Length: 418
Image 1 (cartoon, rainbow, N blue to C red):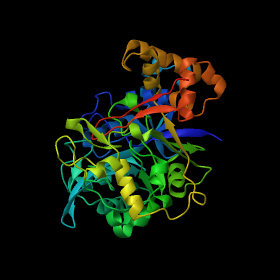
Image 2: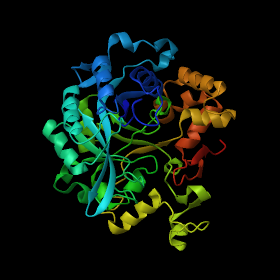
Image 3: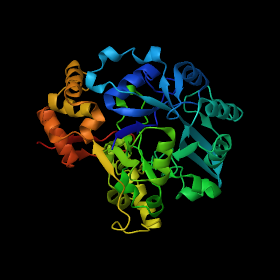
């Protein structure tokens, strides 16, 4: 059975704090290095990026996805190891930042949107432009309730989809501790049946999400939310069969085992909001430690930023698992440490160093693109990578050291000695 990987939540160079390299040709290049078969376009609501997409992409009639025009595809091919050269398709995607009032409370919810065509994206942009400024950022900030955004998408084309993005992030998510809700239904009301998937985000994984009853009934997807092409695929979703818009939608909606292969995540402790904490004081606390001091910073006395683990525990208590783990097993998932981070740890140089970059390309030339190498490669292939292969084996077994992230600071994860 063919296995492929998709990373549908990314950003273009038109989003704030993103690399100018977040353009179609570099994304196409890095998707091949990473082993990503379907890449989101990101930022399809930005007029200038939409123009670029229209000028640079063509529809593949066989699968309903888009590819770079032939004259653009080979631009960086000479820089790719032959083992990584493969087709890359694009899906029309974007992220909307909804900041609005509901029940006398300011809500800040981010939504990942998936669209089947450039025409659907153009219609959406016309509607969104009437609500606010869609030129200012690739991820526009609009006073639109996510429930109404979903209704708008379904009216444009019933094949459109909305997936609540990085659902646990404290500041900007559906279940976030600072501005979110306590359930999907609270957020989407009568349109809840049209929410068939949620995004894990960098600080949670499938087992954490399955502790909450209403999330046992819904598909979990994972994406990188990148601001630089080199970070593509740090989180991704695994699929089986032939890549197509309809197959991906069917896999997400139905969680059919022959189509849906589960999530690929960083260890959640590496995410920026795993623990409770206070960045300015360097304070990182477990939920239990935090509750013991009334969620106040022991250094300065101010309120801590409540992290993902704590928020999961809160909602798991309010919405306990509906079905036992035996009857409702956690969906498939894989934890990874990105290959350049492993090589940086091995070599002792920064991931941006020439030595690490050379080792990275050598590993891909030897054993193929990154995600299949980290997840699917056989032991014999890993043995050919010597120490790097031994580290990958340790990561697969979960034998890693973890320093959890907190209050906007990434955690640090590295393999135990092989």
